[in-house]
Image (cartoon, rainbow over the protein chains, first blue to last red):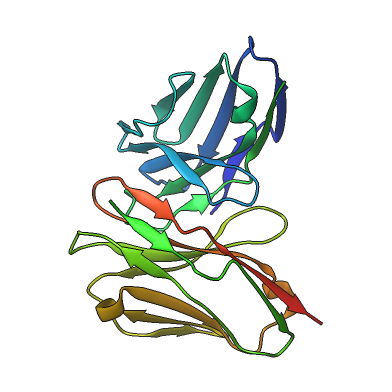
Length: 113
Length: 113
């Protein structure tokens, strides 16, 4: 099974809402990632969990909060988002860390109104 | 800081033509890994190849080939006898042991029938 699953596929939320994005993999990978991708731009790395230890991208606003309950699951908690946060949010996993190939999920299309 | 440049924003070719996608990278690390990913119109990123900084052998996989030249910091990707299904955005990327991972801006390839 080389699949990374993400839910929901689409999400519309207001600026005062709290929502969560979910990601799951069953490949036994020990690293998981969140990316943000705007239209016609490359994915930008937001967070890395490697062996369940978080590496933070200092440029990511605190309204995005990652959580890794175990090595197969990854959540991204969203709170008080801005319209400019509307984007495709991609989850990925890799065997160990950022030196290994990453397998991507289909993404969650987020719209903030 | 790491940087990946893909100078070609968009390329159009006619089916069966060969096409080369350029990638130039910058890093101060001596050990690093280079990758190519494909993002078809459906949106899901697909891993194509991983290469470490100590392995400069060219690689061929079917119609795909890669040329890594450390002296010029380049990792170019050639598609031989292109097909319409090759139409996609192709990203070159660079990863290191410091949990850093950066994509280039991407090259949009259109293969016309």
